[in-house]
Image (cartoon, rainbow, N blue to C red):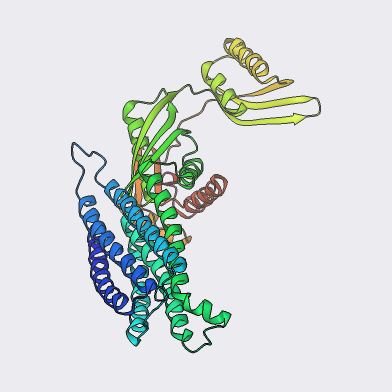
Length: 464
């Protein structure tokens, strides 16, 4: 069932039960003269108006976005929640005034309450209905992120306590006739109904404060610190390469609109940057239900953020490759050692100046005490294989992978150039593994698969 259908059903149910309870309380309150029951009747009457308003708000909020309302119509639920708060505030003020008037009146009948079985029945029915109704509305509000239904749920939760207070009040009024009129207990019991109405008013005022502040905060797009912390954690953990520079969000109905500014290397092609932005948006929306995310890409200078990256950048500047890079904080100072890859046919004399320039620049930039290099030929060719590739090569790889208890490959690719061959066995990635664990896992699979297969091609097990 779609969210707006759930909200509509919950709102109609609230209207039905509010009508029934309002009529029952109003009739019994007039018959008995109980201020507590009358205050409950007015409370329920305003709840009925609020429920009708909620039903209207839910229908309006379900309308799609248009040119005049590009963020949709969800804010109407917050407006309705604020209107319900004002209605409840008016109820509380009226009940408090009436209670004070009865307590200070010289009329001996001002505190009189005619208690009957119907008074008890209507309050008990109200308690049962409100318990079930508030639970249903709270559940639906949580599932659909509806401010209007959440306000209704809060109203009916307060009704549970206020009905309980009224039940205590009319019980006290019923017991007053059994107590000596001159006793302090009689004085308390005869006023129990009025005191219970004051308790109801205090509960209503508290609910008004909570709902009013929440509605105003939503209308003013107040920052949700928990949401910001969640998004920042997601980016830091799963997209650490692309720093989050700015973030803002606003909630409209059951949709959260998120705008992010993310730093990206300025050298990226626009198509690549767009793909990265799409991936970030999908990541956030998977983690936060109901979110619509927009990522703005901010180009940044790709200054190295570690000594290793700086060394590799310097090597590339001098047209050299680097591997087996090591940094050691020795007692004598920082020691740097690395393998430099140079063209195999070149002479040492022709590369003496670039190698020395590399050492000098690394030492200067990193304040190193010593920079040592090991010269290696840059050998990037694939080995030759004389045996022909069998027709059932893919099935052979699949059977062998199963034999060594490896994961089922998602695809197998064989590339050839004459007798040079390389085979990539692609498997699904395990996101829970660290980089080190992943490297060890892939290396083990590659070695075991190479040893178990005939020497047909160079094998690499990689992630899809």
